[in-house]
Length: 174
Image (spheres, rainbow, N blue to C red):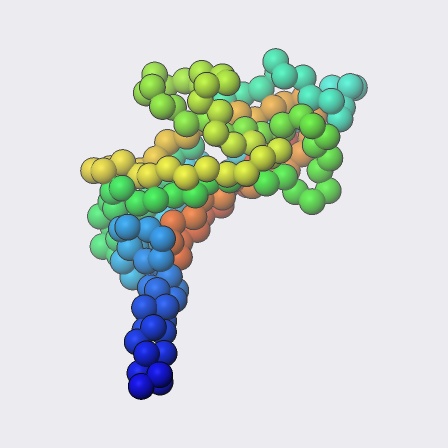
Protein backbone atom coordinates (compact mmCIF):
# COMPACT_ATOMS: atom_id res chain seq x y z
CA UNK A 1 0.00 0.00 0.00
CA UNK A 2 2.78 2.44 0.73
CA UNK A 3 4.09 1.88 -2.82
CA UNK A 4 0.74 3.05 -4.23
CA UNK A 5 0.81 6.14 -2.05
CA UNK A 6 4.28 7.01 -3.30
CA UNK A 7 3.29 6.58 -6.94
CA UNK A 8 0.20 8.72 -6.42
CA UNK A 9 2.21 11.37 -4.60
CA UNK A 10 4.89 11.43 -7.30
CA UNK A 11 2.44 11.71 -10.21
CA UNK A 12 1.71 15.45 -9.72
CA UNK A 13 5.42 16.20 -9.36
CA UNK A 14 6.26 14.29 -12.55
CA UNK A 15 3.42 16.06 -14.38
CA UNK A 16 4.61 19.48 -13.17
CA UNK A 17 8.15 18.68 -14.29
CA UNK A 18 6.91 17.57 -17.73
CA UNK A 19 4.78 20.70 -18.12
CA UNK A 20 7.64 23.00 -17.17
CA UNK A 21 9.86 21.33 -19.76
CA UNK A 22 7.20 22.14 -22.38
CA UNK A 23 6.94 25.76 -21.32
CA UNK A 24 3.80 25.35 -19.29
CA UNK A 25 5.35 25.55 -15.82
CA UNK A 26 4.52 28.63 -13.75
CA UNK A 27 2.73 30.35 -16.61
CA UNK A 28 -1.06 30.08 -16.61
CA UNK A 29 -1.00 30.31 -20.43
CA UNK A 30 1.34 27.63 -21.78
CA UNK A 31 3.34 28.44 -24.90
CA UNK A 32 2.28 26.25 -27.86
CA UNK A 33 4.90 24.21 -29.72
CA UNK A 34 6.65 25.99 -32.61
CA UNK A 35 5.95 29.45 -31.12
CA UNK A 36 8.48 32.23 -31.66
CA UNK A 37 9.61 35.41 -29.94
CA UNK A 38 11.26 38.46 -31.51
CA UNK A 39 12.71 41.71 -30.22
CA UNK A 40 12.65 44.80 -32.40
CA UNK A 41 14.97 46.48 -33.13
CA UNK A 42 17.43 43.59 -33.39
CA UNK A 43 20.36 45.62 -32.01
CA UNK A 44 21.22 49.02 -30.53
CA UNK A 45 24.59 50.55 -31.42
CA UNK A 46 25.91 54.00 -30.52
CA UNK A 47 29.29 55.42 -31.50
CA UNK A 48 30.39 57.94 -28.87
CA UNK A 49 33.34 59.97 -27.68
CA UNK A 50 33.65 58.77 -24.07
CA UNK A 51 33.45 61.31 -21.28
CA UNK A 52 36.86 61.75 -19.59
CA UNK A 53 35.09 61.17 -16.25
CA UNK A 54 34.41 57.48 -16.99
CA UNK A 55 33.73 55.11 -15.29
CA UNK A 56 31.30 57.54 -13.59
CA UNK A 57 28.19 57.86 -15.71
CA UNK A 58 26.66 61.22 -16.61
CA UNK A 59 23.01 60.74 -15.57
CA UNK A 60 21.84 63.44 -18.00
CA UNK A 61 23.41 62.00 -21.17
CA UNK A 62 21.24 59.16 -22.53
CA UNK A 63 18.82 58.09 -25.23
CA UNK A 64 15.52 56.25 -24.67
CA UNK A 65 14.89 53.45 -27.16
CA UNK A 66 11.45 51.85 -27.65
CA UNK A 67 11.78 48.05 -27.70
CA UNK A 68 8.95 45.77 -28.82
CA UNK A 69 8.84 42.12 -27.82
CA UNK A 70 6.41 39.96 -29.76
CA UNK A 71 5.29 36.37 -29.23
CA UNK A 72 3.52 34.37 -31.96
CA UNK A 73 2.29 30.82 -32.30
CA UNK A 74 3.64 28.48 -35.00
CA UNK A 75 1.29 30.01 -37.58
CA UNK A 76 2.39 33.60 -36.87
CA UNK A 77 -0.69 34.57 -34.82
CA UNK A 78 -0.08 36.81 -31.80
CA UNK A 79 -0.13 35.17 -28.38
CA UNK A 80 -1.75 37.51 -25.86
CA UNK A 81 -1.31 37.63 -22.10
CA UNK A 82 1.93 35.60 -22.24
CA UNK A 83 4.07 36.12 -19.15
CA UNK A 84 7.45 37.65 -19.99
CA UNK A 85 10.55 37.96 -17.84
CA UNK A 86 12.80 40.81 -19.03
CA UNK A 87 16.26 41.62 -17.73
CA UNK A 88 19.42 43.41 -18.78
CA UNK A 89 23.02 42.34 -18.18
CA UNK A 90 26.32 44.06 -18.84
CA UNK A 91 29.12 42.25 -20.64
CA UNK A 92 31.59 40.61 -18.29
CA UNK A 93 34.37 43.13 -18.94
CA UNK A 94 32.25 46.22 -18.22
CA UNK A 95 32.71 48.00 -14.89
CA UNK A 96 29.48 49.59 -13.78
CA UNK A 97 30.32 50.66 -10.25
CA UNK A 98 27.04 51.80 -8.76
CA UNK A 99 25.85 53.61 -11.88
CA UNK A 100 23.36 52.03 -14.24
CA UNK A 101 24.62 51.87 -17.82
CA UNK A 102 21.29 50.73 -19.18
CA UNK A 103 17.82 50.73 -17.60
CA UNK A 104 14.41 49.32 -18.55
CA UNK A 105 11.17 51.27 -18.13
CA UNK A 106 7.59 50.02 -18.43
CA UNK A 107 5.31 52.71 -19.92
CA UNK A 108 2.57 52.04 -17.37
CA UNK A 109 0.58 55.19 -18.14
CA UNK A 110 0.76 54.72 -21.92
CA UNK A 111 2.08 58.20 -22.71
CA UNK A 112 4.81 56.86 -25.01
CA UNK A 113 7.73 58.22 -22.99
CA UNK A 114 9.80 57.41 -19.93
CA UNK A 115 8.59 58.82 -16.63
CA UNK A 116 11.67 58.47 -14.44
CA UNK A 117 11.84 57.09 -11.74
CA UNK A 118 8.19 55.95 -11.50
CA UNK A 119 8.34 53.57 -14.49
CA UNK A 120 11.85 52.18 -13.81
CA UNK A 121 11.54 48.38 -13.56
CA UNK A 122 15.07 47.07 -14.09
CA UNK A 123 18.68 48.07 -14.69
CA UNK A 124 22.07 46.43 -14.89
CA UNK A 125 22.44 46.97 -11.11
CA UNK A 126 19.37 44.93 -10.14
CA UNK A 127 17.19 42.05 -11.33
CA UNK A 128 14.64 41.80 -14.08
CA UNK A 129 10.88 42.09 -14.00
CA UNK A 130 7.76 40.19 -15.06
CA UNK A 131 5.13 41.55 -17.40
CA UNK A 132 2.74 40.24 -20.07
CA UNK A 133 2.17 40.65 -23.78
CA UNK A 134 -0.94 42.58 -24.83
CA UNK A 135 -4.12 40.55 -24.85
CA UNK A 136 -4.81 41.00 -28.57
CA UNK A 137 -1.46 42.14 -29.99
CA UNK A 138 0.90 39.56 -28.49
CA UNK A 139 3.42 42.38 -27.99
CA UNK A 140 4.96 44.31 -25.13
CA UNK A 141 6.77 47.60 -25.59
CA UNK A 142 9.28 48.78 -23.01
CA UNK A 143 11.79 51.61 -23.11
CA UNK A 144 15.50 51.04 -22.69
CA UNK A 145 17.47 54.02 -21.44
CA UNK A 146 20.95 53.77 -22.93
CA UNK A 147 23.44 55.99 -21.12
CA UNK A 148 25.97 57.47 -23.55
CA UNK A 149 28.88 58.95 -21.59
CA UNK A 150 30.91 55.70 -21.29
CA UNK A 151 31.50 52.70 -23.54
CA UNK A 152 30.00 49.33 -22.64
CA UNK A 153 28.17 46.30 -23.98
CA UNK A 154 24.96 44.87 -22.58
CA UNK A 155 22.19 42.45 -23.51
CA UNK A 156 18.48 42.85 -22.94
CA UNK A 157 16.89 39.39 -22.69
CA UNK A 158 13.26 38.35 -22.72
CA UNK A 159 11.97 34.92 -21.70
CA UNK A 160 8.53 33.30 -22.04
CA UNK A 161 8.32 29.63 -21.11
CA UNK A 162 10.83 27.86 -23.39
CA UNK A 163 11.26 30.93 -25.64
CA UNK A 164 13.95 33.57 -25.40
CA UNK A 165 15.12 36.55 -27.44
CA UNK A 166 18.12 38.79 -26.93
CA UNK A 167 18.94 42.37 -27.92
CA UNK A 168 22.64 43.32 -28.00
CA UNK A 169 23.42 46.88 -26.89
CA UNK A 170 26.80 48.29 -27.85
CA UNK A 171 27.96 51.77 -26.86
CA UNK A 172 31.39 51.98 -28.42
CA UNK A 173 34.18 54.46 -29.05
CA UNK A 174 33.81 56.58 -32.16
